[in-house]
Length: 247
Image (tube, rainbow, N blue to C red):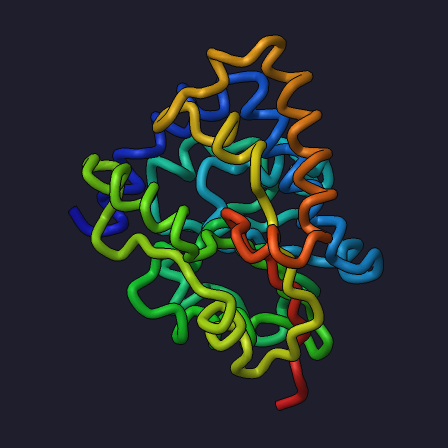
């Protein structure tokens, strides 16, 4: 299947299996809030686009999304769940966003770019729709030996298209540098992500005592591990904050 068909099929798994697990929902809410908090308050108070919004989890983590957020996704099934969670939604190809130039103060791309065979045209569109000085916050899988080993195992399922990938640090920075100034590169996720992040694929959460409390504790340990130089080379994810450069 191509990526659109894969995500149409995955929508019910995200909604009814992944985010229905309390520990997992709390983990993803905390992660999404952290991404939103990376956006400066002035930009966050303006127009914010969630590109590749999926089932609208952005709106479950940030109440303002229900009042003035914008969401775009190519998957009709994903958008069906996103209704009511994000104020304005559009089904569109991110290579041709249905917005004027300089329309947004900030863009969130949460676990989106790794679904694309070529992120460059999409990154160019994100640059186009951002105002001067606008901020882009993105997160995607980090390609490390442990993560690539795990990926080879789970990609045997039909839940993943051939386009699904991970990025090395160099690849991720390069993908987001055209027209943007990279302000932060944050390695993210060590224990909490594999423990409670993907119960629809690997359900470790059911083995944990008090999964929600354990998930929060693991997330706190993860934040400490980010600051350990050798360990942070093996994060499951990479977060980038970038600012639109002048044309």
